[in-house]
Length: 181
Image (cartoon, rainbow, N blue to C red; front, side, top):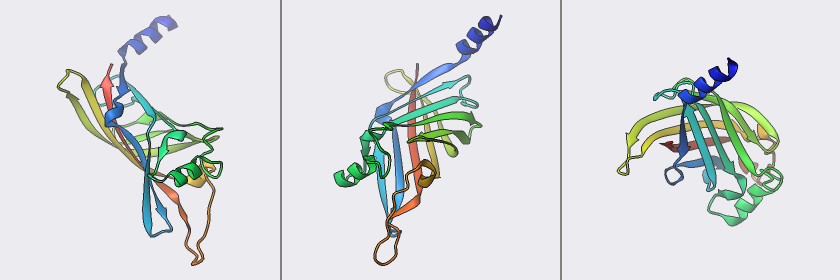
């Protein structure tokens, strides 16, 4: 009986896969508290499983390869990949798995390095559309912020004038477009 029920529940879910050419996981962080550095991850993947077209209670999962970080500065990227920050060799992926979605707030577990923390993200569901090739797509804008030190990204420095080089607060901007399977 349990197997039959499980098969029925699974059959009701629709799987949506990432459209990587229309998606991005990016971040912004204050540098010396006077400017903002923006970066993104070039190698990412994501999926959603939903029982309905409003995506309420859908299961969202996304992953970014740390080695694909790009801030338009090779030296800074190398520093971010080092053990001072992400340690891409030992912890090659940043992973998010949702635990709930009410249509506006996406709550889930974010894993960076060896730390898993529950975070809450704001979501704008931009709707569903069929593209010129007949593919059904859904688009989302996801934003939020985390404290980098919560994830053992603790490197810090202070300038001679006393300014902090890197802010603890990291703003996340995740634009995701999915293709219905």
